[in-house]
Length: 126
Image (cartoon, rainbow, N blue to C red; front, side, top):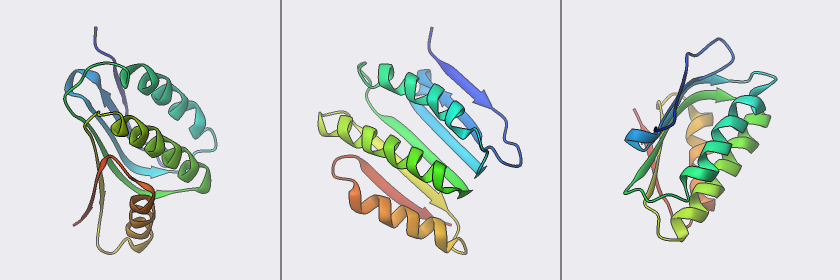
């Protein structure tokens, strides 16, 4: 059975959808909960197993509009993990989606893009 995790967003936690069957993960909203590591721990544990499987394309849609420094580190580490697997021949796409008035998220996307070597990183500004 394919792994699926869906959590509704709150004031401090993003909407989360991990859908193994569709080879997709999506985060949307604001992310500054003090125990955000617990949520990402579950996602990272799944990713560690999933990235070892055969899949055609994995897509990570990130629409987080604001996050704190703890979340920055977690997302950076996740992107580096995805980039590592993309370097071994896996097709991985990250869509960093933000709005033109969110300069901080645009800059974060640009900064992350500089560290990416192997995966496809799309900075999408609406």
